[in-house]
Each structure stands twice: as structure tokens, then as C-alpha cells.
Length: 385
Image 1 (spheres, rainbow, N blue to C red):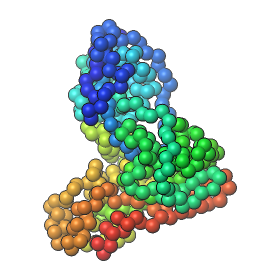
Image 2: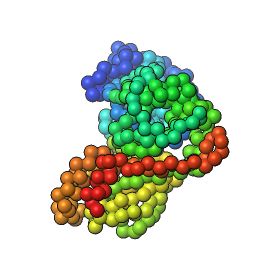
Image 3: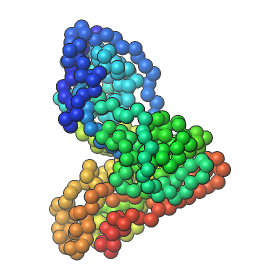
Image 4: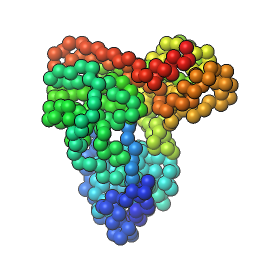
């Protein structure tokens, strides 16, 4: 089967992956061999948030021929992408699930369903991320440790810290700090890039995380995430005042159809997501302090769900607005100068992982931990009271 596949760009001024860069010389009609088909990708432990931005990527354009009509997207791409790319079917499934395959021109509709049926003449853009460092290095980075024993740690992560190395964030992460603190005692189940990591928080979300030091603890904690017995409670400040005091937000979350950096509540595909929330304080009709409990752990779940009901998080660069307009904008003008400055100057999503509770995976005891609101979020709330 043939393909028109070539390197189109390397984003952000970074050089393309050398394996991908060779496509321009090697690809073309009749230039692609059939690739071995790997096993399907299986999801691992749930991650609450996605952090880390790509420093660079290479784009591969693949045109669907008549002979591939009605094939699954993953199958068609695996057969059409040149062998030099080193992209097996399982790797392509992962790229599709990460929202790295778009239909049409770069920036076109994101296709995140590997079973999507292709049509002749369609052009798909595959964004191949830049290579990541193979093994993170230990770095002496201060950690706020809430609890530690031989099996696990509970960390109070500050806003601004990425959880694990990725393209654009090769070091200075929580994993680098953990390697220095724990040495080789971290669980290896997460792989060399994410040792000990059972779940994640977004770079600009602060608060509690649990980290596994042994494989037994990692397996036990992952099981509690999977069966929803591990409890996580977040505090947030949102724009506007919810009409009711509490509620549930339910809706599948998947990649945004046109902006792969964002997630969205989708009518087709995605993964089931449920957030339970209640209002802790109202600041007129301008803003509210809310508590959110996760029944599931999807990427950007709280941020997406609160925006879906019309109450995006203050400071959220993806799902909110830098400055509210309309009736909410008028209420902002009526607020005190300090409140206005705090609301408009808050430079991250106003979200904090405040409480976590779970059964200790080795002792079997129920344990619970809480974290005070960080200074920036506490100051925001104080200005509104």
C-alpha cells in the first residue's frame, strides 16, 4: 500500500525527530512498506491532570488511497506511514488517543478514536512529539512532605511544578526531586520517566499527591484509583455564583475536536466523568468558593466540568476568560480595587487538591491528609470576603 507522507514542520522552532526528518527523502508513492501490527494500547492508572508543553514536534501528512477505504484509522496509518518513522500500530493508537492526529490541515479536526473509518482522499496530520530524555536525573529540589513511611509519600505539590519530565520540561520536576530524596527506593512500575507516580496534578494545580515507594504500594494505590475508593477533594474559586448549593456534573470528557491542548465534554467518544460539587461561600454574584470531589479522574476534569456549567475557574488560561464580559464584567467593576486586582491578576487556575484519603496499601489502615490553601489562593479568597 502506498502513502504520501512527508515532514511538514517542526513546531516551536525545534528540529524534527531525525527519524521523521528522513521522510522527505524516502517517502512517496510506493515508498512505504507494510508495518507490523502491535497490540492495542491499554490505559494505565488514571491521571487527574495533564502537564507539560511540547517544545517541538514533527508533522507527517498521510493521504488515504482508494485501497484503504473504510479501514480503521490506526490500521490505515500503520500501513501507510513509512517504516523509517518507527511508528507501530500500538504507538499510533497512543498518538491518536493523545489527540495528535488531525483531519485536514494542521490545526484541523482532531480525531481521537482509533476505530474511526477512513475515506479515500482524506489527509491526516500526525504530530510526532520530540524525543524525551531517557532517564530523569536526581535533583536537589525542596519538597513539602506531609507523610512518609517505607511504602509511600504524600507530597504537597506547589503550583508551577511539573510532575514528571516531558518535552519542554526535561528537569526540575517532581520526579527529579523524588529521585534525589528516595534514590532507588521508588517503585519502578511507572517506568523510568515516571517512577513512583500513581496519579498526576496539572503543573499549575497545587496540593496533595500520593507517591509509591514500592511496587506493592504502587499496585495497591492504582487499584484504589481504579475502583474509586481513593477520595480526592479539591477547592476552587470560580466565576459567577452557582444557582444551587450543590450538584453533580456528568458528561464524557475527550479531546476538543479542533484544539488538542484542550479537553471538552463530548457527545461521542471520550471517557465517562463525574464531578460532585458544593458551594462553600458566595461573593455576591461575582465569584464563589466551591468544593469538588472526583468520582472519576479525567484530564482537566474539574476545569472542564465547571466551565461546562458556566462557572470556569478564576485564572484558568484554557477554559476561562482573562476578563469577564457582560453582566459578570459589570459586577467586577463594582468590586473593591483589591478584589479586582486579585481576580484579574491571578495567574493560574484557582484550584487546590486539599484532601486525600485512602486505605494504606500495606498496613490496610485508612489514612487521610489535608493541605492548607496556598498563599495565593487564600489571598484571593480574603480579597473577596
